[in-house]
Length: 183
Image 1 (cartoon, helix red, strand yellow):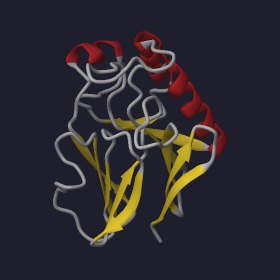
Image 2: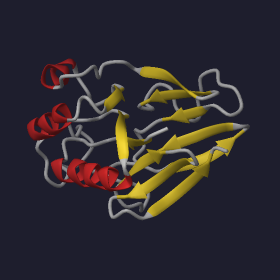
Image 3: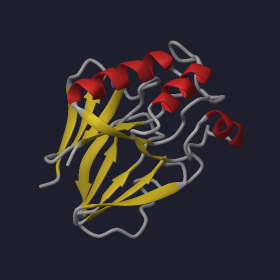
């Protein structure tokens, strides 16, 4: 299995996206999942560092062959889909990863306090809160990679990696922030 980078809450930050992609490349991630809020910073958020939604769209489009999946965030709109050359309007997706189901969403409808039907060992992934999470509750693995642009809760900007061992929240400087073993 190749490594998978999990990026959420870019909010139009070219600086945050570029750092996350550079780190994911260093990690050897061959594929990418996007958990929403790609281009627009939203009315409640400040402008993030390096705010350039059009160039964020260009960077993502240049990597579209690597992007396995993108889900819609609460700040993503139909006009964003006009700039993005891969589907981003699905509210959630379900992937099979070995014997596990991965339920992937942004987190503004389904979230860790309102889980869909999952079995022990399955993984629920969301963004939205900008706060990293890597924990297991009642046998369900919960994961949030945080935000590459507008982190909250005192955390550094971050993204995620899924590999053979499990899920890791990584800082944009390459440090491990949280780890969840899936074995």
